[in-house]
Amino acid sequence: MANKSIIALEKLDDEARKVLASAAEHVIEAKDGSGEKNPEYYARKAYSDNTYRSYRSDFQDFAEWAGVEKPIPVTTAVVVQYLSDRAEILAPTTLQHRVAALSFIHRLLGYDDPTKSGAVTAVLRGIRKDRKDNGWKEDQAPAFTVGQFTNMIELMGASIHDMRDKAFLLVGLFGAFRQGELTGLTVERLKEIEGLGYAVEMGIVKQDQVASKKVNKPLPLLPNSKMCPVTALKAYMDEAGIDAGPVFRGINRYGRVGEKAMSHPTANRIVQKWAKRALIPNGDEYSVHSLRASFVTVLRGLGVSDALIARQTDHRNLATMQIYDRPENAFDDSPVAWLAEAFQT
Image (cartoon, rainbow, N blue to C red; front, side, top):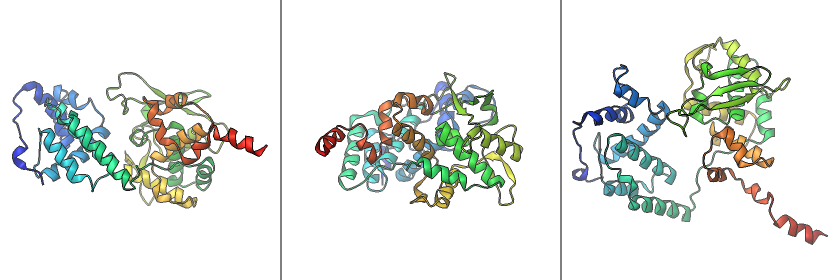
């Protein structure tokens, strides 16, 4: 348990800080404000709902550990102690997310960022190394092969649930969307390009929270193909009567289509359901991110460059795409193949 005496709570008197505090409170307590388009409103609009939701979850764990409802601001010593106490409970990647949330909130409130210290970096690195030394492996969403994914699509019928799921999986794969981008897709972002497919206006994305540049992702039209994302999407929206708002929505057991976008757990269950129906091993390990991972993995296997793949995935740092390497990729373009050939002759 943290020493509460070193956790200081300050009253925010400065008007500029109050504006930022509105966004910070949206992280801490999901407070949306009055809705009036004032400075507080625009400060909250600077980041996506998915960003706030993610940071809120991370912050709640820290607050529970601290034993204080709003443990802000804190010192580097508090952050380091938190990481140490949670090192055996949470995965290193999760701890990294917790640190990012603390950094985000402190910066919003105008406080010094306690996570930028070398001590925090060193402890995080030490925790990761210790866990790896003891057999921990970083979670990686498994990717579908072309054959596995095709089998899932071929199993689908003509019910509204199956039509939605088919469109969801195909759009997720060909669009290489992040989970929040896929579940948050709206009709208004779909622009049909005659003979080509849809151009999807992305708006706020993870790498561009202020939507400072307009990004369009292509969804290709594949004429006469059972794997066409555009055909599947149109068929689903027509059957569901969707002409505005969220595209992928919850559907009850009676086939009634809801008004709200489907939840993230529902999205993951869809992927897992069809993975298991297609008898894919370890179907429970798949998630929406598997669609994005499949896009990268299949194309890398075909020899497509990371730079070209990143035009669709919106990876800014090509080095991060190495996380999609699979064990079999070690044989791709390896000099060992030439040595093996020499010994076979």
